[in-house]
Image (cartoon, rainbow, N blue to C red; front, top):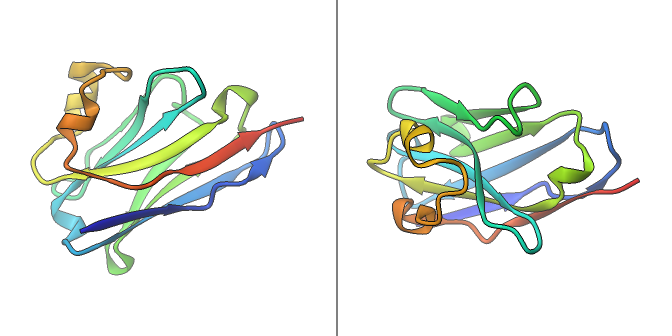
Length: 133
């Protein structure tokens, strides 16, 4: 089982970027995939989620209206479309997958829940997004 993020880059405020999370070794449509980010010196933050089982989604307040999560099961890939990026979006972005966790867990536990590493079974290695003027 493997998750590989890609698409990170250095961009300017107001730019858009699309991150990809490519899954292998399991059926993506049966899993929940979450997107997280961790800025230097800060806690890991859960920002988005999509469930392959019921297509439910979640977006944290910090990215709502700017970031959109989607899935292409034919490519076993989850995308995070990020629009109107700002300096505070600079972070390492991770995707994670779990077979049983619902997206509603993000509302229940909170975005900066320290136990996310125990809730999601599989994690990618991360991709750096830097927003700089």
